[in-house]
Length: 183
Image (cartoon, rainbow, N blue to C red; front, side):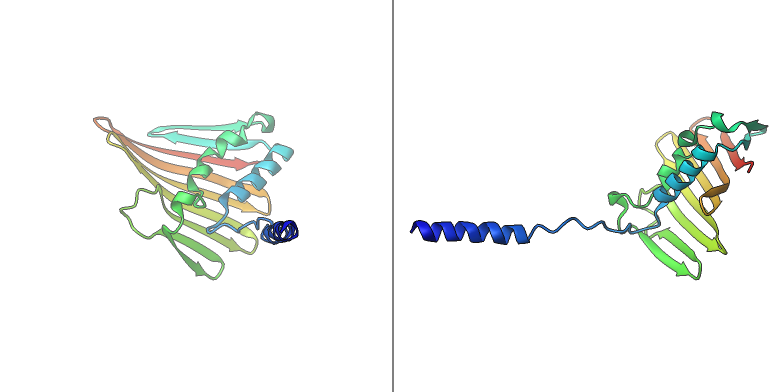
């Protein structure tokens, strides 16, 4: 009897150890914005180029040159977190169209509360671009944004945000922010 129990226990241990598959890393369901952001940010923080920044809020326009070490890329790229479609809550909400060197993600149902309406990524002869359209709405606030990013290899070419914000009982405000590294 003891021998039977010992054999059964040994078999159970052996069989259970066979089921311990190492976790396989799954590839993202949609374009991996986070990886692109990290690669660009790492390169920019390493090289620290000066940047030209153009900001327009309504009719007020400002254009400045910022020296490389003063640029906070974590802060500059914060909006890119909003266009990451690989969040579990967004799984299955977008249709994917692949046209040659272009990928386009569009919200399947406009009534869905997801903030990203569409995202398009292109690769043309090594020059990459990403354009995302976002929306946001609460009881007192409505906003629409277009985020554009251009890069080649790990080198940022330009980063732009164009937006419109409307707060109840206030004027609509349009804004534009453009950042171009001076390589």
